[in-house]
Length: 82
Length: 274
Image (cartoon, rainbow over all chains, first blue to last red; front, side, top):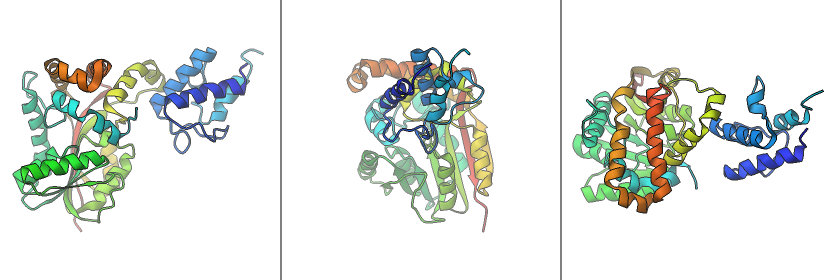
């Protein structure tokens, strides 16, 4: 299981590389549209960074793409095995 | 480095003129051996044929770049042209070009997706390869329709997306997409059908929506030939990495053209009479 702080650190690093502000980042922050305004390429880049760091990522592993920062945090808070 | 349109164009303008030629856009090649300047002129001719611009027509050139097209439309057709761009230096360069040619084309710094111009003020809206840099495509088209007079024409040509690109494919090919972003800025391509649907929702009649990917494909080889021809100057303008990235981007685009991911489209639509 990955801590929220570890996950947020990766997201913050990604946002810095993407020249986007990490201010006011919270679980409720949306990833697209009115939130971080990620386009598909930026989402792909974040997806790859998360996988590089943690071995798996919520963009590639589920049926639905995460919509908020909280969705990403929740993905890593679930133990990989029971 | 910013990939936003204004900063992007300011940065690469001089280099792109060497690579793409004075007309600064894709070519429409009758055959792959057609010289680039003839091919770019041919693409402009395709637009002109659809636009049907007459003397005295009021033309809005959205994303006018360096003003070459606006000046040509004013000088060669007697049109009254307003060119708009988000780039302040683009406005300055275009205004200087008009002065140097003695052409009465005007240029203003405005956003094509919220242009602030009066309703019904133009007979023709002209958007040559600028729409892909405007993320708010619906805003661009609704503003274009708004400023057209009744029976006015919108003509547009641009890079198009020809199929859905699943997220995992974007992820797998993210290096290729990143190369395109580095070379061409924050571009977002849509299918021709999306343009057509948006225009029809606005009450416009689409009279032409044609995929011209095949005749534009030789553009990339022509650009690479110009990179080779101007390599020393381009290294000074773009740096070694910049030149390498540009060349790679042409190969990526060529592959996307060939596999049916991206291509090129031309479209014309007419606003309803009153």
